[in-house]
Image (cartoon, rainbow, N blue to C red; front, top):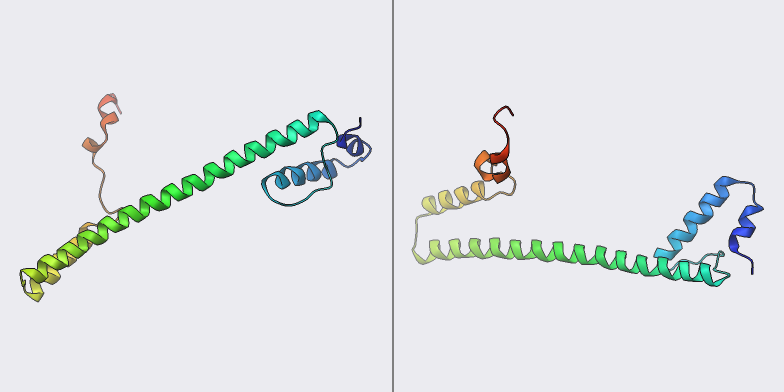
Length: 133
């Protein structure tokens, strides 16, 4: 049996061969169609393997995005709960407007992401660095 690469061997352009291969590989990750199809058992097995690898990679990608979004949502919910508790405390204890504003300004200033400075003692591996560094 012939192979789809037989048709490409008669084509002199290396650019055409490259773009056809790229097109084929992209169609394995998407529902797009392609005129290059497996023509023997080895090519069919290779195409199936590529489809399975693509499925695993795509699933892992979606899983990591979902995990990151869930983590961000949990962090945001905890932050909102803390803010709600501060407002409730201020209201329940009838704190003055001035004190209330100062407390909330302090919290906003000191809870911004990325604002905390990393200190040398916060990095345990630094203990193993030689003194000359």
